[in-house]
Amino acid sequence: MEMRAVLKKYFGYDSFRPLQEEIISKILEKRDVVVLMPTGGGKSLCYQIPALMMPGTAIVISPLISLMKDQVEGLLVNGVKAAALNSMNDDAENIRVRLACQRGELDLLYISPERLMVEIPYLLQHMQISLFAVDEAHCISHWGHDFRPEYAQLGQLRETFPDVPIVALTATADKLTREDIQKLLSLKDPAVFVSSFDRPNLSLEVRRGLQKREKDRAILELIARHRDGCGIIYCMSKKTTEKVAEMLVGHGVTALPYHAGLGTEERERTQDDFIHDRVQVVCATVAFGMGIDKSNVRFVIHYNLPKSIESFYQEIGRAGRDGLPSETVLFYSLADIVQLSNFARESGQQEVNLEKLKRMQEYAESDVCRRRILLNYFSEYAEHDCGNCDVCQHPPQRFDGTVLAQKALSAIARADEQVSARTVIDILRGTYSPEIHKGRYDTLKTFGVGRDVPPHDWQDYLMQMLQNGLFEIAYDEGNHLKLTQTGKQVLFHSKKVVLAVVRKEEMPPKAKREVRKVKSPVLFADSQQPVLLSDERKDLFEALKALRRRLADEQGFPPYIVMSDKVLHQLCESCPTTVEEFGCISGIGDFKKERYGKDFVEVIRKFV
Ligand code: ADP
Ligand code: ZN
Image (cartoon, rainbow, N blue to C red; front, side, top):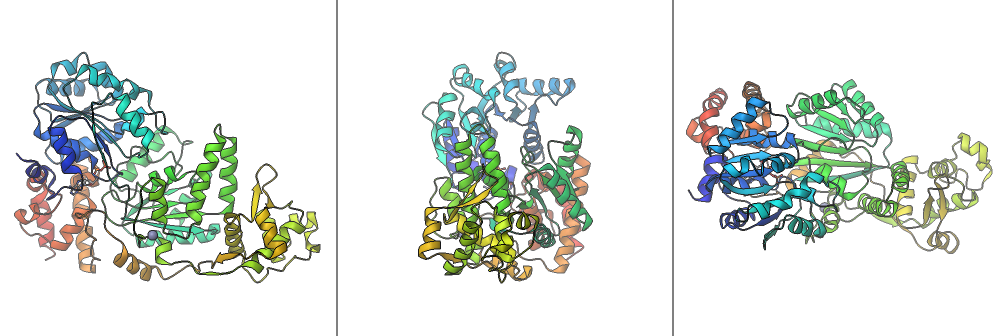
């Protein structure tokens, strides 16, 4: 069978995404291949299709058992013969899988790297191997943050199996890692494919200087826009995850905290509830997400600033893997910067970590298209503004902020540079706080000169002034603010300062969504925007979701494995009333058509 036919038969798709076809051809020629694609880009098909076309079994090396499970289940529901060998299996299962391998019954075998090493002299010698796919290949490199010692031994593969093609796949882009992968896997003149790291279906938004109450409100509004969609809220501390989850539960949202302080069992249960759509929101520390392949995460919120752009991009990358529009919001405040700087300075690698934080901060404070900054960070150059970030949608307006800046700088100077940002705001606003009393700052000439500007706006202006280099924060001196040369020029010589008008929030959420709908571009030709559903269609969607859940429960699979949200949307739009029509939907292969067609068509018929 030709590769397009395989794509249609097993996966139900009509066309390949960019690079997939080229990659598959190279593998079929038995070349070694390196594939760099962002999460959700479609890496798996690149080796799954050759696995279906070449004689023998493809061995897929994957570091995480949960990912293997996901992949294997996803293949089984498409009628592909796949299995996994790992420490989760019981003996009976292991015997069954090994036998199937020896008989050549499997198209794909997923295996952990440590298990692979053990099996090289045994099982692997007694089976026909079509290819090796090394998933998350960056784990072999010391450069990234995910180095795994078990991966280091994979270099043996090339030596032991000189004629079997090796496919290395990763979503981690940098050049050093890429070179390490080629070298450490001993790849022979590999064909290297690098696809764009852009994820245009993710909207990008930064909200700065919000107080706790404002953050809560913003989160509730966002969740209200995603009535049926689930999401992740990343928080800096364990305590915050619990507080945010509690707040959400108080407002009738199903939410759970997730952090390293919870027991293994509780964490696994939470993860499982999330994967199976039993809980809508997980409020988590960065510990959450590794190994979660859930394709229908509709939003990712950062309650606090992440420590680097890499972490940020990886975390928001967990939204919208199915290519449907998904929302990401980053909250950030001066307090976050202070705290993260302290963490960075206490870390072993303070220079690197402070630099990373600085880049993150620049992203958050930027007033050029945020996607451009992200892509640029990953050495990609974007030709156009994206139209799907807050800067593109509400370009900042500017004004001459010299006098405003002078007021703040003067307050800092008159307080002998012995005050934190918070106290500066108290001085400007003429607010009596314990620090004000202690330092007798109420006697300063600047006390109360900024009463007309709300505290939130002062926060914002101070942040902009920090970004413009008018003062620095002395982290080793109680986070006091210190004027820089530029700051002094502004204060004493009226050097001009241009500031951005603080964005007044709250376009009504609905209008906002309309803007998105028109403007947001699509990731792939195959990921068309869902049409907004009428009420009647919404009922159909609900009914299809219920059916999907029932079928998933029967098989013990997560709902998104049985059918993606995207397929459900398409079903609502085209309403197939025969099994044949059902089979024409993108994402429905022959196996799913036979297995689920009748049930779905039956439900749809009731609505049309
Ligand atoms: P990755 O491993 O790169 O994170 P996946 O292989 O999981 O990405 O693919 C992401 C999603 O895109 C999956 O839902 C997959 O079925 C879908 N997909 C991949 N290739 C195509 C294609 N050619 N047409 C339509 N959908 C595709
Ligand atoms: Zn933009």
